[in-house]
Length: 386
View 1 (tube, rainbow, N blue to C red):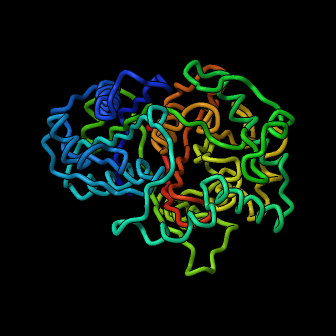
View 2: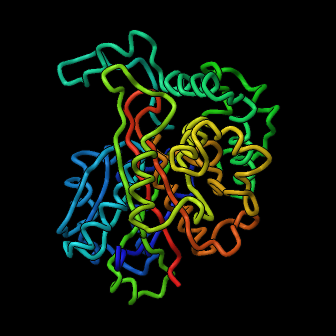
């Protein structure tokens, strides 16, 4: 993009358990926080992006609640990748001259939900609802399928998976807001209870209340603000499904979304100094490192060894806020935090001890749905404004 849109404001709710707020209130809280970070207010917003975590009728309900006057609104829902897709689609709308200040919010309160048996299959259920629950296709099981296949095809080990969690716990130990700030070892991961073989409890993400928001603006708006801005250099999105039963469990939708984003940015994985990569499970990170091109397919397990993901001096620091594995996975849709931490790194505002020196180019990648069945992917390449 010749004159890319800029991210000028981000905000992450500081709490991980929020018993005293409603979902609309959390959306509003993070929206106001991101706008304040940018030096803007609700009256400046003319575009709004949300997904299925937004309450009621999504943009209809939230636009009224926030009293937004909108030229553009969008409810694209690809699970945890939705906020990253929101950033990308906002850049498209801004480049087309349809809007100038876009607000993206994501929030939820899963810790306040009484989890129980899934609802009975009804006429409005998705097609897979008639089949997958009968074979116990739980979320951990669907990711365990991919981990098992990766181990069979490429020799990846449980110790390799554990390295991802160890890196996230190191980063979370520097984050005062992290849900799990304690550092863990490979042995700790392997000794934690088995959830769905080969995934242990510490291979799985946290469940948190909370949310986050992002403000994307036209270049001319960014030029009038005093806050450091981050350019959106490239964007890509894709869907991957079961291919009518011929599903290949060894790659993710990042194969397509990553290529699109890098091509638009005119950059390659070798240019990236920091990566926010969706980490619903440890295997998610390993497979996305491969699919995004940071290593060859099958080499993800070897890539993450020996502290490669640790900030500040690892080969490729990943999820320096602690990620979904140790810090925050708001509304079970952690994509918004991926963009927020990438912006912090590019602004030089990451937590002390994990700031990547001279960080100028970063990537944020989200994955929604399930790695083992149908999934959505979205990728943005970001660069610090000089």
